[in-house]
Length: 339
Image (tube, rainbow, N blue to C red):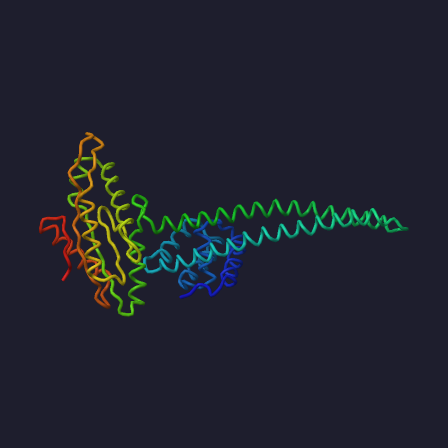
């Protein structure tokens, strides 16, 4: 479902949402903007019903209810793409509003200043009969316009700053929703959304997945401490970012487990990528925070699966996971292809 065809339609949704929020005393934060933007775009009909019922019962939408509705109707894995479109629309509208405010304010100031200058010029050359009092009255009116415009500019500047803050918060919220804070990689939610989009629009393209798990990581943490473990995870994140070129997408799947989505990449290249990461990881030396001594090389095991058309995401991951555990059972630090 599309949320908007152009910026005009997106702006209209926001123009409808803001007065509604003000009328019902709803906190103007990014979560609530998203809820009420969704309401007027009719992206989630069940959400609309729930919001209508909430307003009917409470006369407003309490924050705790807003959060619950957001989690239950919008932040499901199959809705990540929709949420991303909403946030893009809000950012686009906020940018347009900020630009238009600045242009309007500057244009108004230019008109006022020009009026003052021209009246001053007129007063020096015209002093006939009753013309001077008229000019003086026009000058007073022009000065009042300038004063009012200055006040307007200050109010507009405050509004512009609030819009900029909203834009930054929306960007931050989007990043937090899709990024693993420790490694900087995308999180599982992004994996789910990319998979769903590919499954719907695959056109018989190949989709492979590399599942990677750091060997004996629990023992490593117990031996060297969780801080050292976090350093290893951060290093793996950097390594995957460096080695995975578009269209490959590295994801922290959870704990010490990582996944690399490889759409439209030849199988030989997928295996080559996994082997390259395996070799580079196992060749890096680390030093213990506790003892200052070198630590035995870190290794990882890999399982690769190629998506079978119409296969569920669960089945797809299970096959890659099975290949991964075959690699571990066979001695670890190796790459195994799924059947």
